[in-house]
Image 1 (cartoon, one colour):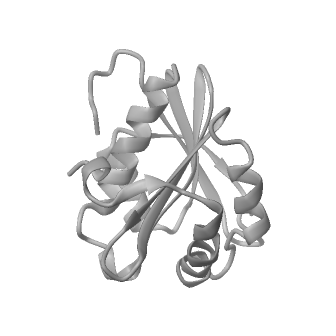
Image 2 (tube, rainbow, N blue to C red):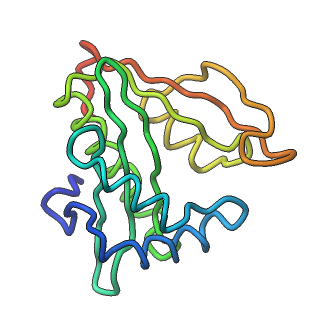
Image 3 (spheres, rainbow, N blue to C red):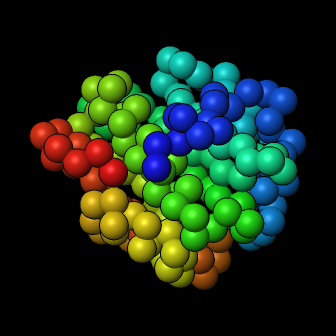
Length: 158
């Protein structure tokens, strides 16, 4: 599933309210604020790339990339509860990997909550490997794992 042909488009300022509402639902302990999204969108397209995916109800997923080659960073990825398990997360991540390559990145990094088993499974299937650990990254007692995926010459489009 490529999201480019199925409801994906660049994130715009008018999407921020819906995206922040999803953040609060999906990440109640550490949601991004509207100011954070405004700040990120201010750097599109120079160093940022943000995409939303819509279904009949509204935004059901989004993804963001920070790219300063040779490195890229998965800033955020989220799939609404109603769309989880549909392959949308995998498709959004695949599109992000493609965009990172297009921008000349040779590796992608990200932080993910250590206890987020569904995200860890998604990243493992997409070729990300553990590189480190950040204690209390998401607040007291909420640690993060640092994951990396090499892109140069890996030939995998997922």
